[in-house]
Image 1 (cartoon, helix red, strand yellow):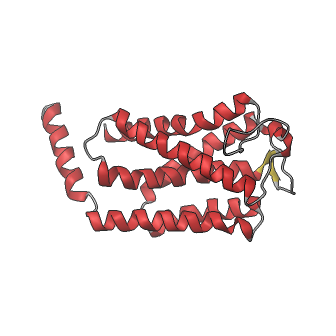
Image 2 (image 1 turned 90 degrees about the vertical axis):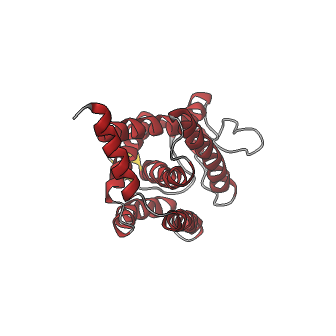
Length: 211
């Protein structure tokens, strides 16, 4: 069997196993509602404890929604979160008590791991609904736009509404208008690069699995 025929067979099988549109829309709605509700709980629970609980619960959520294969994206986000938190550990220190694990602040560690994976799940829902045949660049731009939007919104709410403030870098100016992410410039730039880097890693993994 030649390579072209094998690719056609894979595409045909992919079409048959694709979830129907109503199921995809419901999954997108469910993901958005669950993640928005969880984020609102910062008013009730300590940020670090909530971040740990949500991170562990996400594994259960993926199993219950029959997306075990997507656990790998949570594992990828976890590795990236560990690397980033270790690299920037001297730049994290909050205005309230936080748990530390092996010298790393638990809140940014689990918040990054959960946040990246949660956003990728929402993006993946949108991709299956609206971008079935679009090129890689359009997928990248969609994820990046979503990432930029959500990181600014969530960081703004965390800083101004939930009063979660990183006093270790509090002397630095925040971003214009939203006045969030008070950190040195290299750290602010890194915040916006982590999302696209995560997307590229996930897409490369997915392409290797398909091949």
